[in-house]
Image (cartoon, rainbow, N blue to C red; front, side, top):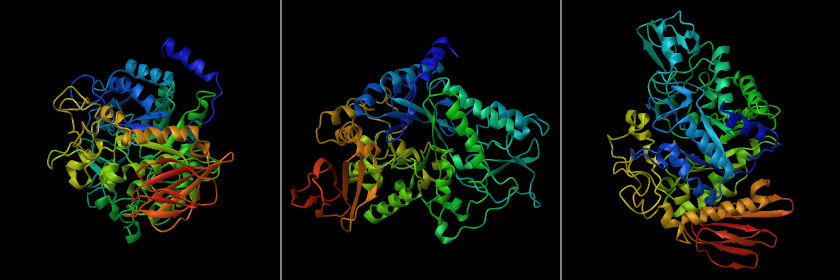
Length: 550
């Protein structure tokens, strides 16, 4: 650790810090698609640094960076070859330190992705593990003998398609991979693996990181007996979204093992105690178990809120445009969250198609309003504040390894490069004429520069909503209560310290006159040019969201 880093850490530890993440808004950046400073068509960390003034102007509280670690790039950084080094194409370790420092100077927290389930097959640990059955690191990964018929040890499937086991001719065993064969799963049951991975958390905490998003958090531990998964039933297929052949099984033994809970208590202990007075937040990607509600999802808070600070609520991203579906999903999450618990809620991500393409551009503003007025910690995916649609990626030109295996699951369209101004073929994302992915249609018209000058733009709506959330305690810290204002209308109330806020969203295809609850309600934000308010009611346009305060 450098002297500057040590001094900075000591200064930060001296301050008593509350849970800053409660009610904060996190901005999720996929660095490859945010801003390129080298002209190679691929975004990088200096690009993120250069755009920090924009993020401060926008009004977010924190940024979450998708992986930028040293990696062969088979899955664009999720195949990590060194968790404590920066991919040279992304930047340098010193540059990362500068990014974190400058973000903090601007009042922006920084979270990193923690790739805990697996490593790249080119990671030195796996290279050594694969070298011999007698290797000192053989048990750092999950190896098993063939089944009686010579095939894989059990019926587990890879999320990306095919068996979750790959045969290694050199050592005569199979190794496990939840995703690609190039990304083998670590054996967290080995204490040496756990110690090494916890040291990685400490390494980044020494760089004053504010938190981690734990990728595929329920996959760290599997059934030690390697039992087969049972077949799926109709209620478990396609929940929360369709994953193809992977959905033919109930994943009882290859994810969500009960032993995860003591493991996450140990991880939480490191995050809470390594920097006294300045703990790191843990956000976890947890998929609710199909057909059984959100009990298992909520169990990752821990019995005394001593495991994950905030499991991610990803159910909204899979919903149809239907008021009842949104109401049911929000109410179910609220009912499952234990007293004192918070949650991170998202509508867009690097694993999904763009919100504006899934629901239509006319609904992008209403969805922003839902995201930024809900209880919890909203995660705003970069570009969704612009209403960006999908990138047009031609069939056969997929970059995403999942998409190359099955075009129906291609994630490239949702990784649209960010347009900064209307000039040039790449709209300010890069000086190259060949960005790593095509930009969205009308990227220049949707760019930051153009939308900043348009008072009716999606970007300025997002900025107004973020400012409203910051200055309105009811929206940032208040509780949640669902309000029934009629069919096709989603409505909920937030209250804190005597202040109330009311969000109303019209899911219907026509204008609706909506009755208002008792109170002296004042409209503070509208996402469309809805009708007038009359005594006790409000006209709300089709696909419009309205926020009121009392």
